[in-house]
Length: 330
Image (cartoon, rainbow, N blue to C red; front, side):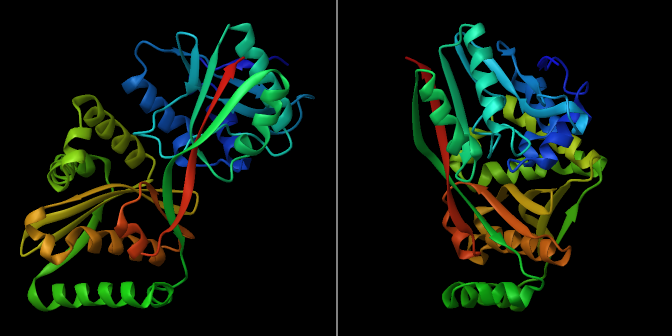
C-alpha cells in the first residue's frame, strides 16, 4: 500500500482521527477539522504536500500508521499551520511506527527536491524530538534544535478546594482576596456561551476586549487572523468543543476568554479585558473561573498554552518548553 497524498481533509478524516487518537501527539491543533479551517484561511501560495503513511503490512486501524500534514513553499517544507495559531504541532504516529515513518518522510522529501524541513512547536515529550534527529543525521542531514517558546498547564484535581491547596500560599491568598473584593464591592457574574449562532453574534465583543487588553494583541489581530477566529470558533462550536466566557461587572462586559475542550483537557486559547477594570484583576479572575468550570466538568488538565505570561504561574501552571527543529540537506 502506497502513501496516500492528502488532497482533502474530509477524504481521510476517520483514518486521521483514528491515528491521532492513538498518538502521543494528540492535540486539538492536529485534528483534520482545525487544519482544514487553517488551510482554507491561510493556505494561499503554498502547496499542500502531506501524506498518510500506511502500516507496513496494511495492518489494523484502517491501515494508516501516521499522518504527515505538510505545506511546501519553494524548496522548504513545514508543518501545516503557524506558530501564531497552532500552539502545538507534530506528526500523529501510532506508537511503534516512528522509525519507518521518519525514513519514508525523508525519502519523499528527497524525491521532491526539498532542501529544508522546518518543524515548529514541538513539545518536549515529542517522539519527533527524540527519534527523528538520529535518523536524519544518519542520512546526511544537518539537524538544529532550539527552544522556541514555553507552554504551561496544570493537572486538575477533583474539587476547587483541592485546586486552591495546590497553589503557593501567596497565590492562594491573592486569588481569594481578589474574589472577596469582587464580591464585596461589585455586582459581578461570569458565564459561557457555546451555541454556534450565539458565539458568532458575540465574537466581536471578544475581539474588541482582546484588542483593548494589550497592544501586541491589537497588532496580532490582522483582518486575516480575525477571519480565522470567526471560522475556527464557528467550527469548534458546531463540534461542541468551544466555551466562550464573559465576565460582567455592574452590567458591563469587562473580560472574556476563549476556551476549547478536547481529549479531557481545557485549552485557554486567548483572552482579553477592559484595562479600566484592571484594579479588579478581571482578566485573571475570569481565567480562574474557566478553570473552576473545567474542574466542575471533570477535566483532567487545564492548558494555558503558549507564552510566559505571569498569570499562568499564579494560577498554578507548570512551565514546559516548546522546540523548533530545522532539518537541512548537507
